Length: 83
Image (tube, rainbow, N blue to C red; front, side, top):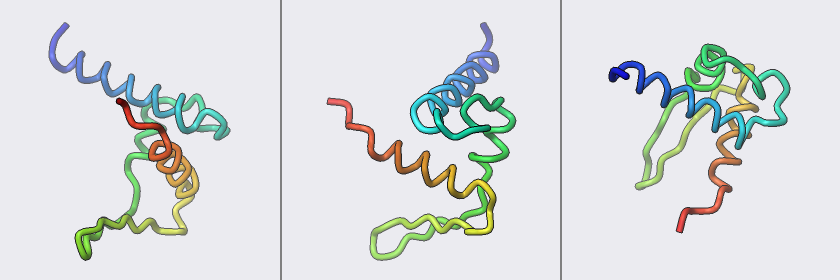
C-alpha cells in the first residue's frame, strides 16, 4: 500500500467516525459521501480570530450547513477525554 492510499484511507476513516459520532441523526449527512462531507462540513466560510489568548470561530449564519457544523463541533467537544 503506497503513501497516497494510506492517506486516503485515513481520510475516509475520519469521515466515517465523524458521521458515526456526531452526525448520525442529521438526515442527509448521516450517510454522506466523502465529497459531500468535504463540501458541506470541511470547507466552511468562517474566520478564526484570536483575542486575549482565546480563539473564536466566526461562522456565517447564512451558510446552509452552519447548524450541522455547530452540532458536530458541540458533540465532539462533549466527548469525554481519553484517560
